[in-house]
Length: 310
Image (cartoon, rainbow, N blue to C red; front, side, top):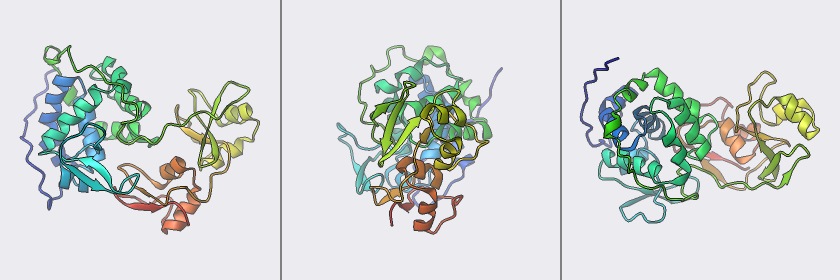
């Protein structure tokens, strides 16, 4: 199948303008295809991440720092910096000359870190595998992150750009991955098992609340049976309904979540909602609603502060 695409050159982001998702794709699709052919990262994934992470170019970080992927300074960054509150106060983010440099650094970031190396064995058209793999590798903590990327890709047919991949253009001598496990963009701290159940399941603890990572094929009944608790406890503790589907890798608490988190507040990232924040900090969803005077289904925006304690 021959795909005909007309490309437009990306211009520097005007801080006072607000663009649409369609305009964002028009502006940056050529860069995404170029990066795909250089680094073997699907253009659909790059564009979808740019749309999600930068609120399609309208986030403060994109406008003031040309940073479209939320990449923090990390050790070894010698360029300009921009400071803003994120997971902690006054965090350091990279500043780029223009959006194109941000796209380039995103490619380098993924291709030179060991925990993302398995992604480069996937087919360039396997955007679903890439979306799920990014979450598994720790790019984001939001359990909905893969589906958010997939929805964007399918809504705007971004997978069509992956068909422009030229295998010969991809260098087989890409930069060797560097093991830097603590330099992920959005990942929270790694949890260590606190115990192992009789069924050989590792149990972790967050904010003093025990939890597990769901396995493929898990059901509420199976988890309840494995840990000798009631089925209703599993889905109620996690603000779920009995009919809800459990995803592999999903955090599931085995005890009631707390009324407060250790942290004072959380800075919202693209795609997050009160439920995902509740799961991230092991704080009851109804408490978050009360502290922030919000409905549980309230739409949040990137950069918004959510109180985590009374």
